[in-house]
Length: 112
Length: 111
Image (cartoon, rainbow over all chains, first blue to last red; front, side):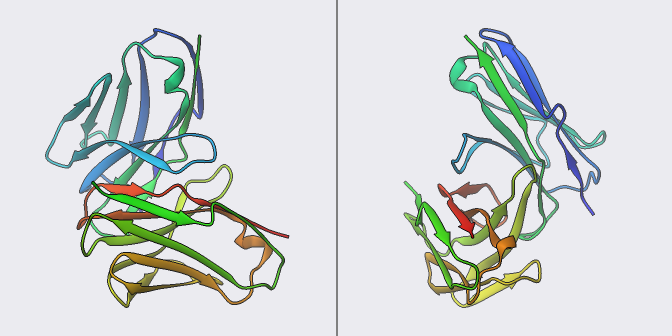
């Protein structure tokens, strides 16, 4: 059974800092991995999708990497802004419609 | 572009009452559709998924059911709500086993 862990559960940083969010998974046989952000009381917004064959994906100030052999993905946020404050979730797809496992998220606060 | 809608946004219902939550997707055909529940402090739990009209797969035994009467419509129902059904319900869609896109969610409180 796939298990997905996100540590730390919460993170507070000053504006402008570069930061890394971590996602670990137990089964390296994955199909893809997706990063989301969730604002309080809102749905999930897709940030990046990394296919199993890829090592990283970039979108603006965001860069996500994937290392299947070590069971890890990182989300790098450059020059953080207060608007980046949200909960960030990773989801690992182990190869089927029903085989998506979500982490419990990292709650990020960027202080002006 | 594709959009996904959910309603209602919030709902307060007494124990034992029925439930109907609706999700619709625009701008795509034959999407895969999903219902998730998010409980406080816990990850998202997949409740149902559907790969086509009338095709529903359930992931966990529960007090809820799902239906897909039209290609881009997904409905979550219950005949009698329990306190434990409270939570944040999210609908999502994807093309094949790919990137998932989520709706705005419905906050359900059962009293």
